[in-house]
Length: 159
Image 1 (cartoon, rainbow, N blue to C red):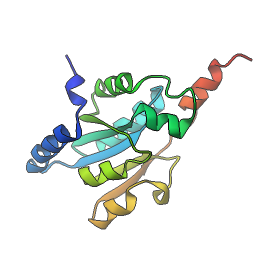
Image 2: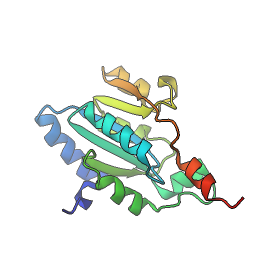
Image 3: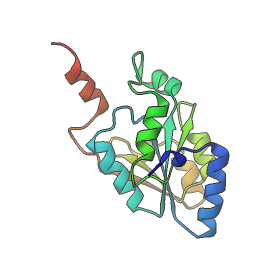
Image 4: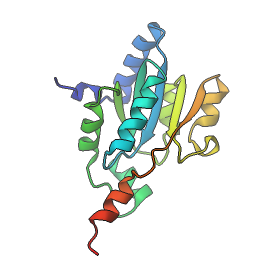
């Protein structure tokens, strides 16, 4: 089964959103770098998807990840990261964004629910105020301790 069709442009996403909204489906949005996908990511994405009918993942572009995480990141390029996310049963669409925050994309999507992991507070979630302004919800999902891309990379460094 080819799931690469879940990797969409903003224009393609707008078409999908129109169809999903016509069906009165609940749209959930999350975002991140998802550089080294691990069980914590999977658990988080499954929980996010369970909140609604459709899960859209905003994925930081390679340049955006490098600005946020520093030299040497991302480990996996944006095409590979998008492909891995698209292969997950819990994701309905993956869309890249170039900016450091997904605020512009969130304003475009206008999700019913915006989610981030438990290492965030609502005050620090990009786009939270916008989503709340039209009656949308912002949910912080439990952080799964012991999993992080940075932690994995530190294990790989020579002693």
